[in-house]
Length: 270
Ligand code: 2AM
Ligand code: CA
Ligand code: CA
Ligand code: CA
Image (cartoon, rainbow, N blue to C red; front, side):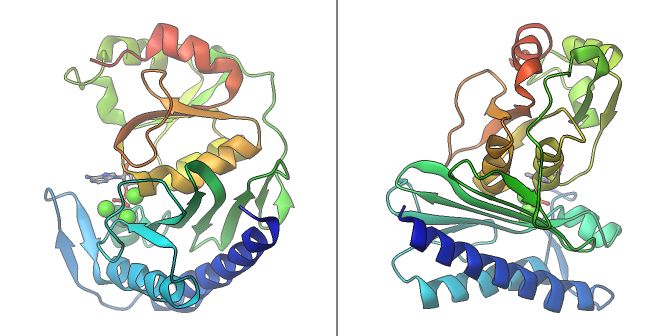
C-alpha cells in the first residue's frame, strides 16, 4: 500500500474511532439500549454494537467505495479473498463487559491490503480513552501517541503473566487441559480481561507476556496482529501454524522468547 494512502486512511480511521467511541458510546454509556443473544445465552449483542458497525461501514463506503468490509454484526461485505483493501471491524469487542461492567471493552479496526495482514491496526479502550495504534513499516506501536517499547527479552515462563480464559483449564475437548493446569502452576499469574482486542493490546504493551485463546474470529485479531508485530512480538495459531486471516483460529500471541516453550510444553490442541 502506498505510504500517502496509508497515512490518509490512518488519519480517517482515527478520527472515526474517536467519534464513535468518544462522542457516541462514552457519553451515552448510561442510556438504555436493546440487548439480544446470538449463538448462546452468554453470547450478547446490543443495539450499540450494530449502530457502531453501521457508522463505520457508512463512513468507509462513502470515502473509500472500492474497499471491502468484514464486520462482526453483518454490515460488511461477503469477503473470501484477501485482494485489495479490507477493513476488519469489531464495533464492540467485549460486549459482555460493555453490558455488565460499562467498561473493559474496545473498538477494534484492522486494515489489510493485498493479502498482507496488519497494514493498520487500532484498538480503542473507549471508557479509559486509550487508543493503541500501529502502522506497518517498522515505526512501532503507540499508546495514546506514546511509542511502546520493544518487548523485553528478559521474560521466562516462571516470571510471566499470561492471559487466558479459565475454561481452558478444564476443557478437555479442544485442548490438553492437564498441560494448561501445569502452565498455570508454572507461571507467575493468569489474567482474563474478556476482550480479545484488549488482551492483544496488553501483550503489545508488555503488561502481559502472552494471550492464549481457543476460538477467535478475524475481527477479534485483525488490529491486534499489527500492534504485537510492531513491538517485536509474534502471533500464531495455537498449533504453531501461521494465522488464517479470514478464518477462525485458536491463537497464541506473545513475547517471542516464550513462544517455543509454550508450544512445546504447554499448549497441545486436540
Ligand atoms: P465479542 O465481545 O466481540 O463477542 C471474550 O472472551 C472475548 O472473546 C471477546 O473478545 C469476545 O468478542 C470474543 N468472542 C469470540 N466469539 C465469542 C462468542 N461466541 N461468545 C462470546 N465471546 C466471543
Ligand atoms: Ca460478539
Ligand atoms: Ca470480538
Ligand atoms: Ca464484537
